[in-house]
Image (cartoon, rainbow, N blue to C red; front, side, top):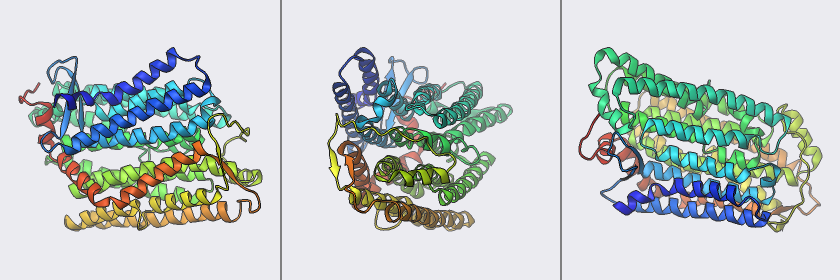
Length: 529
């Protein structure tokens, strides 16, 4: 158990070491620097796999608690790695490795300090998933946001600067709300440890209950902004479509931090209690989930540029996850956990695929797509640098297959993993007893899938049937197509291993919906503030 607890901190230490190494060894040759950073990402992936495997094989210890400074809970700061956190950390590690390998082909040299910012963002993401208290959740949020501010500007360009300013402004407001919410919750419960908050909530004096609810509501608004929920999503499509492709791919997991925080606190503090707070919060999450899915689906249908389409697909996935959290049923949650992995990996692949397609399309086709979207990027300067990777000739067929697989996953069509996740969520919702919310839930999942399918097919026809050159031999870099294939292959593998994967996610959901288990692990002696 002691070894398991120590593994919990490694997903934070590895990217931290990468940041320090980049700052100390900044004068390395470009190729050596690329290899060093890929090596750090590979180590992070191995550590994340080890954490998940150890937790999956443990029948008794479903979470690892690492006390920073060895102070007792709730006075000391702790990291808590349960199966949910391990899944999110592993998803982040896979996506970050793919994005980093892709960036190593040419994007890393488009600006300064790309690698330190990239690893700092990964460190902030892993810390947010692993922390066991609200204040350090705020700290890791700020760390990942500070790194993301620099990464959104990577590569330069007028559109990127304008989108980044909007992104920075809205996230500063969200951080301010986050801090206010944390302060109100601390004022009423006397603790910031999430397990201790869950234990203290039933003991709050009636006169203080309104203040606690206000703090939870303010905190919820901050998380909804991070998650890209309607109507707080307006910054997301422009920011994601303007960012450099490997940066946008890694951003695909950033909205999932908001989903993770809502799921963690909702199930831990509110979902297993009764009272007006539960009914109000559940109704709000269901309505916001439906509205976000509807807006994202319509936005995807209206998008003519692939990066813009991928950004709206992020909104669709955010709405689906909010809807699943609001449904508050373990079976639906298990399907949502499966969905969050495949939707994140597929969206990351789609952002990278957009850049590859741009390279093989004729210039006039790109200008047409950009002109149709007034938010389009400025014309890129061709970069034929081949210092890191070989090129793959005749790659149009491979690219088209990647696009088709991504389309099937994002639309939720059989037989791939997008369909499996939606099927599990719908089956669980029907099994829990159909209500009016059930039919809205099912209609949203099926309707959004149909609209996303139409949007993807229309873009595919525009790209591969009317714009792709027929006579020229297309080439893409191995370092650029390989990460895309890896991400989509993992999604296909998850579909092939749907049985064992769903068994794992069902056990994870059962633990999430039993907050007493989480509290017993973090507060083993029954200590409370």
